[in-house]
Length: 292
Image 1: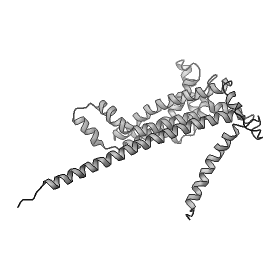
Image 2: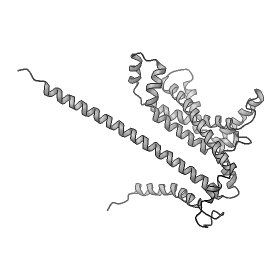
Image 3: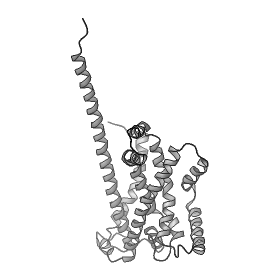
């Protein structure tokens, strides 16, 4: 009988510590009682009631929209920053630029949010933009925060690439922009997807930055939930959280499934190439005859 070692025990304890609260949250989202601490039987009325809760659903759609825009902008800016840091080894101010790119990783969100708030206020006084804080200012703040994560992920992937492939394409007459879009981008596509998903999740989860740079009518889902739980956790909060868990789990499964399929196709292609090379080598040995 297989014994559980210390590492296995700690692994299962960690998994239980992470996922048991989520399971409890999903179970209590079907609680018929209005009091979340008192079980009143099974019911789906809180899921049905979400359709009538325009304020909460508006916050959800607003958060999803901001997270989508943030993921796109962060991937573009983070990829450009990663290329500068990896493909241009020496230029004046490189150390300062690298520090500015990675600074949001270690900077407290309170300081970042306060500095962005002061920036937006000063810009509104000087040039009249932004006239009011809302989705645009939240999007800029989230992009500033998430670009650093994308730059770190993409730069680590760029350092592992074989530059001979790009150099061979340029030797054959391909322009640098064509090499970038047709060769480099497909090779770093997994890191781009990872950065986009990370940016989407960080933007959807952010509370501190949005609290500083948001305005009237621009309440995100974390802000709505945080303001609601001050008076006690409501069952509809459990319902919307369960739906978000379902959606996130579904897209995580899709990402894992397609990544696994791509890895299997790559492994089969390598195996077929090795078998073809072995057959060619065997055929060349059988046709070659030593001189008498």
